[in-house]
Image (tube, rainbow, N blue to C red; front, top):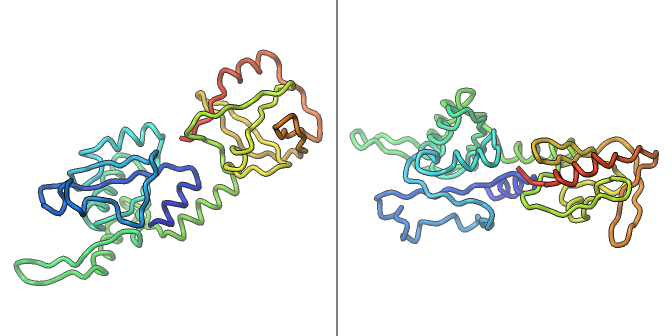
Length: 250
């Protein structure tokens, strides 16, 4: 599970944690068990929701958070497989989200029938959960598979720069947008590559293009200069871009 969290962080995608509480003493908010697993370390900017229903939507503001972050696809992990995880998956699918259910990143326990004594093993529960969710409510995914998909998407897109925080940029004398080195490094944009800038709804999306560039220094900055000269932006365009330059990670 931690590897999955790290993969989504590296891709700049949201990570949301959820804890469950109910009248059972073990789930009380003052219980020593009311915490994230020790191997999970939440960052300050990652939401922690407290729910008191089996699904993670009904008793939290999860839906609002997902709208704000423009999330369309969810990855479900956690405890228990056939209870909170499965119930959240079913509701998410009904709400219109695409869902990846990562069975190997969930956990459950044997279930006994109090009347007959019959018991479902954890393997039987996992198999049953996958059967009822697959192609109805979710795609059954693996940690390796999702990590590979994220890595491939970053390679193919050049890792679109969508920063959560506002950052300062500079328009040079020719009207070119200069990215700080830290942003280029985080985005995986290598020196010598130009970028294509798309402005939409107050956001700027940046991705590599095929045009060859060279890197020159301007004071403390390194600036990408096209090998083939390009026509400078008009003053009107420069003024508009200055107003709209807000880089944000969705």
